[in-house]
Every structure is written in structure tokens, then in C-alpha cells.
Length: 322
Image (cartoon, rainbow, N blue to C red; front, side, top):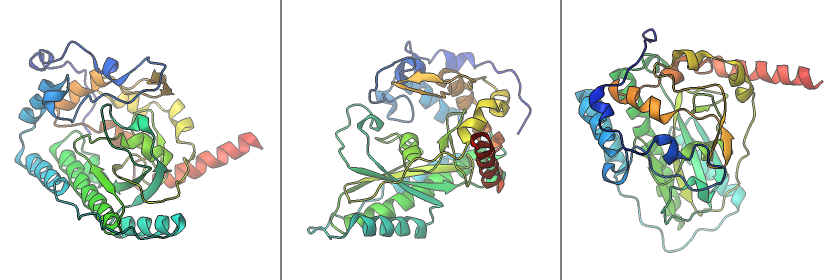
């Protein structure tokens, strides 16, 4: 990772900014729960920052990156099998074990299940499912560590492609047994927020950088999801000390060129949590062919480190409690 330098947005990009801020769209400061509003990685004609999103694609014209994005979108566009006319019957316990086995055999590193919450769906969504299956795909850390770079961007797209394959495989397996299933994976933002669902599914905890931290892979992973009505048993959110660690850690704050990461949690649509300032982050992201510096420098992300840190935080908690 190159040393941090003072960042000033490109005046050309500044001219494309809408009158409304990302903070307003994301609901920073709002004390009431509501569904999120689409802000980025959606149809540019439907979002306030659409011109900036198109500018990003125009700047990020590397053939390697473009090919990686095409591959991810092509997998995401593959048709799903029809839902079988007759629903197969089994217990929620058996369905849960089987669907997790399918996901892991399809190459997922982690899989968890959560009950769907309406506030995870973007506003004006007509979807209505009971459960969401979350899968996580580990990234190549050596490629992540080169952030921001085309190499990191291509690796990100590669994991989104893998996630799309996993999600399609799991959704297809469910549909062939007569139950509806709706898969989603990046790079575009689909109908549902995956991070809050992944937290409830036990995949990890929210970090100060606004992304997740897993006790197995740190922040070195990507997510995909499958919404379904298949009877399943939800996992539980976990606390392995990442949040306490983040409260005193300053590494991602110091490494962020646009200074988009801050110490204090903020109220966002009724929840107090860490929020990465979209209005600062997006300019740097667009001008550097994506980013992920905060994920690369996160102490939890280096391979083999997260389990050791989780154990250390657990011992610290036990010592304080006992």
C-alpha cells in the first residue's frame, strides 16, 4: 500500500455531485428505523449520484477490470431453474444442515442464516421472504494488500463472481425442491443490505471502517446472499471482541486518504453504529479504481491473525469479568 497523502477530489468529479449528500440519503442522524434508499451501485438513472457512478466506470477503463466486471455480471444474469411444482418436506433442522452443506461444497468459506428484517430491503422493494442465507468468500490477501490497484479491483470482482456462483447454486438447489429462492451478489447493490443480515447470521461484527470483521478472515472477504422461504433455523449474532478492539484501534483512520473514517459512532436510520463517510470516501474510490485500503490495513485481515486476536480478546474479557 502506498503511503497516505493528502487527498483533494478532482474538480471534474466535484461538478457531478448532486445537491443531496450521501449522508442525507443514508439517513445519518435519523433516529427512526426505515428502509434504506439506494445511493450507489444501482441503475445510474435511478440514483442521485448516477453521474458520479458513470464517471467511475469511464475512469476505471482497465481491460482487466472491465473483463472481471463483465464476468461477474454474466454469472449474475444466468437463469435459475423453475420452482418445482411440489414442495419437498423436511424439518427446519435438516433443511438448515443440508443448505449449509450445499453452500460449503460450492466453495463458500462461511455460511450463516438470519431471519429477514424488512429494514434490510431497499425502499420500494416488493420482495417478501422469511429467511436469508449469507455466504462469505475469502479474498487473496496479497492482492487485497495492493489496494488501491487494478489488481485489488480484479480480485474483488473474482470473489463476487465466485459468490454469484455459490448463490446461484444454493438458490437453484432450493428451487428444485419446490421452495422459492432469490440470490444476490455484488458488484451491483441488489435489493437487500447484506452486512446487517450477515451480522445477524453470525458471520462477523461491524468494524470501525464500516465493513465487517470475521473471527476467521478479518475483513478479507466478500458477501453474497440468498433470500428464501425454505424453513430454516437462524444463527445468532456473535461477539468475539472485534468491536471492543476497534474502539481503541486507529489504524484504518490513519490510513484512509480522504479521512472518511472517524472514531465516534453515529445514529443511522435508528441504529447507533460506525459509519464511513460516503461523501468523502466516494471521491477517492472513484479516482483510484476502487479502494479497500481500510480492509487491507485492518489488523484482523492478515491471514491467520483473526483467530488469534479473537482468542486474545476473549481472554481479556474473561479476565475483566472474573
